[in-house]
Structures are given as C-alpha cells and as structure tokens.
Image 1 (cartoon, rainbow, N blue to C red):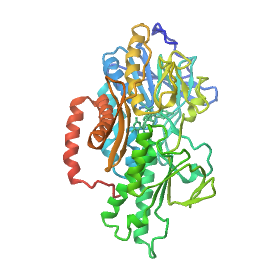
Image 2: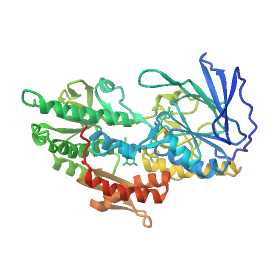
Image 3: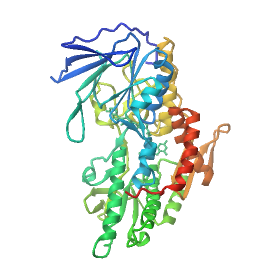
Image 4: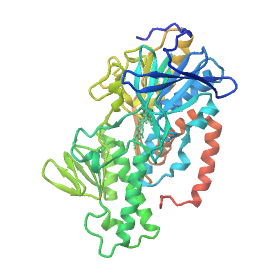
Length: 484
Ligand SMILES: Cc1cc2nc3c(=O)[nH]c(=O)nc-3n(C[C@H](O)[C@H](O)[C@H](O)COP(=O)(O)OP(=O)(O)OC[C@H]3O[C@@H](n4cnc5c(N)ncnc54)[C@H](O)[C@@H]3O)c2cc1C
C-alpha cells in the first residue's frame, strides 16, 4: 500500500439495462443507468458523463466535509477531477457541538450548513443518501433509497462509480450490549439525538412545573453514563442550561433541590483517556457544581425508571444519556471485504489507505496504530482534521502519479470545556514537545479555536471573522438557552 497508482480515465461502465441522460448544468451531464444488484434489487447508476478522475467522499462530517471542500475548490472547480460528497444528512453540524445542542445552549439553525449550497460554492456535487455497500470490482458505492417523514420515497437505491473513494462516516456509541440502553437511553450520535434529548429535558421541566402535586424525588434527575469528554462536558452544560431554563419562568422548579445530575463511569476516574491532572481538575469543578460523580460504577441495565448498577444499586433517572465507548457503523461489515477490527473500524495504514489501494478512510471510523505508537490514533476532531488535510495533498499526488507520503498524527493536547464555568486542559508545547497546563479564559479561547479551524477550512478566514463578529452582536439580544 502507499504506492502511486497510475490514473486511467477510460474505465468501462458496467452493463446497463436501460439508460437516460439528463442535463444538470451547462458543462457536466449525468448519465443514469439501471443495474440489478446481487441482492436482486434494482439500483440506478448515477455517473457524471466525463473522463475526469472520479473522487467520492462518503460522509461530510468533521473530516469528510473539510476534505471534499478542499478537493472541490482545487480540483473540482478547475475540472481536474470530478468530486462528489455522499452523505445521509442534508445539513452538517460539527459533532463536538452535540452536547451543547442536547443541553439547549446552542441554536442548531445558526450552526448548520447545507451540503447542497456548500457543494455549489466549492465545486463538488452533493448526493443525498446513505452508503449501504460497495462493489470493489466495478468500483461502485451503493446507497439505499431515501424517504420523507410520511414514508414517501425521495430517491431510489443508487450506485456511484469512483476512481478514488474516501470513507469518512464517523462512529456510533458502543453500548456493549447493555440491556435497555437502546430503548431507554439517548446516545448522542446525531444532531437529531441531541435535539430529542433537549426536547425531553424541556418537556420534563414544563411537566414538573405544571403538575398538580409536588415534584417527586428523582422526577427531574439526569444520569450521564460515560465520563469521557462528551459526558463530562454535557454535565456542566446541563447544570448551566437547566438553571437558565428555570430562570425564564418555571418558578415551581428549584434546580438545586429538584434536578440532580449523576455522572457514571466504570473506570476509577473521570476522563480516563486524558492526563490525570486534567481529570482531577474537571472532577473538582463538577463536584463544586453539585454533579454527583460515581466512578467504578458498572451499569448492568437501563430501564424507563433509571439505571441499575452491577453492585445492585439503582439510580432513579428521568433522563439517561449513554456516552460510553465508540465503534464503527454497522455498514463497515458490508464493505465488500475491506479489513476491519472487531469493533467495526476500518483498518488503515499510514498512507490512510484501506486494504484496497483505491479506497482511503479517515476519522472516527478508522483504526490506525502508527509504527512504534502505544495506542491507535484517538477518535477526535483534531485527528479527523489533520487526516483530511493530509489526504487532500495525497489525492493530488495520486492524480499526479507521485509517491504518497505517510501521515503523522500530532497531538496538540486535550481541552475539556465545562460550559460557562471553566475550561481546563493541556497543550503540547510546539518547541519543547512537553505539555503545558492551561485553564480559564485562555483555555476557553483555545477550545473555541478548534471549531474556528473547522469553520475556516469550510468557509475561509474572512467569512469566519465576519460571522464571529455578527454572532457576538446578536448573542446579546437572545436567550442563552433554548426555551422551546
Ligand atoms: C458530544 C461530543 C463532543 C466532542 N468533543 C470533542 C472535542 O472537544 N474535541 C475533539 O477533538 N473531538 C471531540 N469529539 C469527537 C469528534 O466529534 C469526532 O472525533 C469527529 O467528529 C470525527 O470526525 P469524522 O469526520 O470522522 O466523523 P463525523 O464528524 O461523525 O462525521 C461522519 C459523517 O458521516 C455521515 N455518515 C455516517 N454514516 C453514513 C453512511 N452510511 N452514508 C453516508 N453518510 C454517512 C454522518 O451523517 C456524518 O455527517 C466529540 C464528540 C461528541 C459526540
């Protein structure tokens, strides 16, 4: 793996049974052909009528959208390649914002980005659909049919030809088969999950405020399972927004008395993957807020009433969030034999190539343990961002027939934002290579920088500066918590 692949643009299209041609813009036409898949299902091959090298990026998340935007800007617009994004959603939200959506401290509409518009501005095609499989021999990515809320079909099953494919479909929570989690706990995998949790939280507060009798013990309690960055940050954010929500007029709810937040983890400290000093500082800050931290707590079952521990203890909870562990999406096991781990992560090498040299992968859906490293590259936005930047250069090299270069991950440190209260973390020194402890406003600024870097990769510096200024002004006239 890792060698330059000579690029040929003369691949034959698979045999077709029907064909139509449709003009979609003045320069590029789209050919539609129907094929029958091995499953017996019919699929529509959607192929651009061009000899250009076809690059498809599947998944427009933290890494995939940055990559496809760069590729579109530099290769798509200049007609050096045909660049397509395949994505199951129509809008993009940066995943590290999900806990803020869940807590209600962030307005989704202000941060979401439409893929169709992004593609139009940046020289790539957006195709709506969920990848369901691959045909590596014919170099086709399959997507399933899409439906609206009323069950009406929007698009039929389709197949897209590629010369270079990049899989960037992220990860999903791993409930390790714990009974009741899928049914009773919310897992923060998508913006829809986060909004569902937020609606349940607001409804629970309104219900408690308007009910005839007293608020019962445990009626508004929240249990967050998994004390990684997501769970810990969510607890602080929830503490802040529940107080905000109540302050806007839910006068029968006393947050100090009625809303208890419990953070549970099977390990012996919170933030187990981060340095111990960070874990101690975050635990102190959360305890000061009144969040109950339960380490060494192994969850055996989640029910509609709350959380059962292996020790036999029961924690009554109105709302349960499962934020422990990640695994690859199920579709990875259906990708025509691409090598994957037991937890469904695509195995890639240091060139970010899968076991098929025409297929690359990046971000949370991958497993890459660099030579000599103690652990694989962690599932983080900063890793997806670095891999996207690297892959953009490598795809250009691949088009030019040049040898690919290895990817080197640089850990810039870890920051944990405890909402409005504090941010703590360590940054890796650029010159010394040693980590530097930071907290407070400077840490908060560095935390926000990660999102700004993502936005800059998508929109450029000018737009991000103007957007930041406009948000600073409008934020003064808006509630800081979602009230509906
Ligand atoms: C609440 C929370 C807080 C976090 N905070 C931080 C943080 O502070 N710092 C940090 O570094 N990391 C953080 N992370 C981790 C970070 O969000 C991920 O590491 C990062 O988003 C991974 O990027 P990605 O491109 O691999 O996947 P994602 O950003 O998850 O994007 C995957 C995309 O693929 C699409 N997709 C999935 N399946 C399919 C399919 N079959 N077909 C088509 N499209 C598909 C999805 O809709 C999505 O758009 C946080 C995560 C969460 C949940």
